Length: 170
Image 1 (cartoon, rainbow, N blue to C red):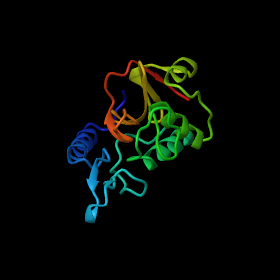
Image 2: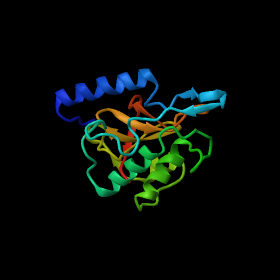
Image 3: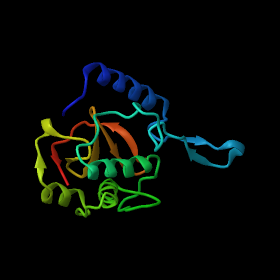
């Protein structure tokens, strides 16, 4: 996977690791004041985050930028199997909704996305590409990170791009 300047990459990874460890980038639940139930902590990766806080080089296309912006706006949204939004998403529902927001219709399931969209070598992925492993997809955002809807009980979050076997470009 392509990375940007090595010093920027190291700083980005350190920032992301600190945020992941703190729970902010994952949307971990925190108790609401007054015991009103769980709420999601605001993410520094939400729209309007300061410039330079987001990992990776800029997306290669306006469509990729729009897909990533949509996915960023959904950080902290609950996962639900078969979810296509807006109140919850599964992994392929998130990628489909993100690319729909960017003006491009893509298949609904992870298997269909992996088999029907043009494949990209893993060493040439760019922000906005969809990474695939059996049963799961995520949107690559750069510097080794994805936005993903992980599994039951989780939320849409920023995560390291690990164990992916294929990349496709809508």
